[in-house]
Length: 221
Image (tube, rainbow, N blue to C red):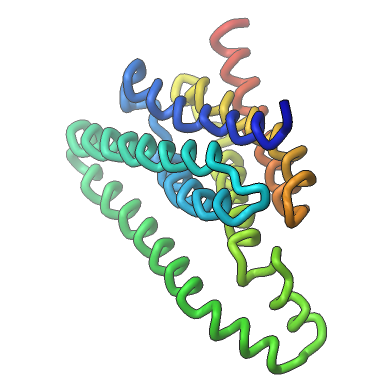
């Protein structure tokens, strides 16, 4: 009966959405940018769930499932794109693969060098920067990177402001809106308290709620 249970449980909606859409919906509604973003986002939150206190196995399991579900959605999108867009399909798939690869390499390089950079800043004693380097929610800890990358979900929503409603997944937008609302509360009851996590989920609830309202209005009103 605590937020430590309900907020992570709501994130099962993301994996559930991917599984539901794969079973009941055609590949034409798949938002490839959002699915690719969720793969990286959920991968980061698997680690976040393990590092946060109290450690949250529900959150870790749902994000593991979401990585698998969204990878399947990307595979479906790629196959559909290659079959239906003979002129540009291969290039679209290649472009998305290159962007995803660059993001993965960038994050891996950042994590690999983070220890060296953190020690250099701590030893330099440069005031604010050294304090930032020692902070548990600073850029050298997963408590910073997982919420920071979650901003890309809202950015994707903003890029899709004019997306046709027949290509909006009702289940996906419902799950994103719900997790945004519940995680605003959860960000204050975990250790360390994470204000960036609160802000990013406020933005996610608003941007996803906008698309959810558009979808409901178009389909049911």
